[in-house]
Image (cartoon, rainbow, N blue to C red; front, side, top):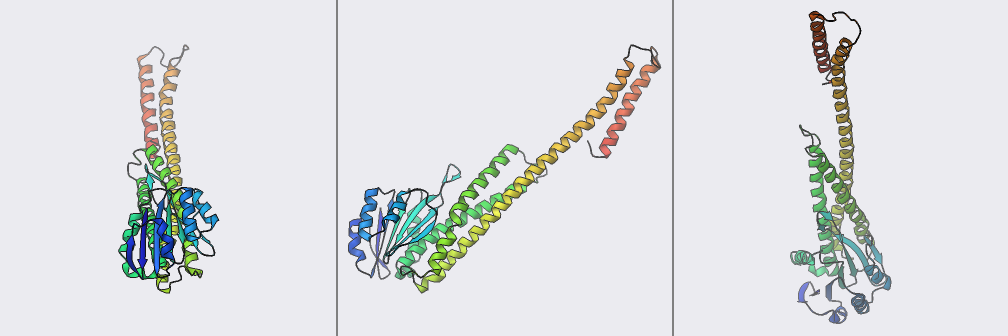
Length: 323
């Protein structure tokens, strides 16, 4: 559990028990933050009593896989966002629920895969804005979440471009199964990222464009607009990557069809060449009289026909690029 107390923009105390929160929030000059990881219903009940949280918001915390959103209540905001986390190469987003009151910020993490210490470092790196209280704390948290999504989408874009280039290697893809598997994994990661990043536009947009007493700090508006710009870029970038992967998939299918046609063309050409000696030797193997039967010149004629026609067909097919 992490707790902090700011007073007039200065960090005065941290590591205190949650039971003291109600004493601190009574003073409008104080700003309190505390964090819970995997809290029990009893823990959430204590928080609800301390801050007067709405029962529906508490119920949403106990429900898994909420959509990123902003719920507005009489005395607080309830925000749900998702942090980026990878488990065995697969994107496994971590749900982070946020309660915002006039002078308190509460973060409730689904698990410890979302490292809140990185958010604290971001707050400590921008102490000049700490005087804006809850608005400052919420901005630092959202900025960290959006930046982590931005870094991920940037990495996915590089991987998608590398995958596209591998489709047109001179020797072709060395391992078709591995390529298809990688394409599937990138599409899966992109789809999951889209689910958690697209609604973030609405979350940040609501905080900027709707008058909220909790975060109505004019000096912080440009910082929230910067976060909004980043999440807009993430959303657009995700759509671009989806298109790239869809095009790569279609290109791969077209390449496979083209390769199959090439193989069938070559097999058909070789079958035609092989049919010539088969037909000639079959003709001369008949048990009926034929020109050259029992004569040396008959053998040589058949041999010349086999060789000549086979070479002629090979040259013709090669010239037509069928071989």
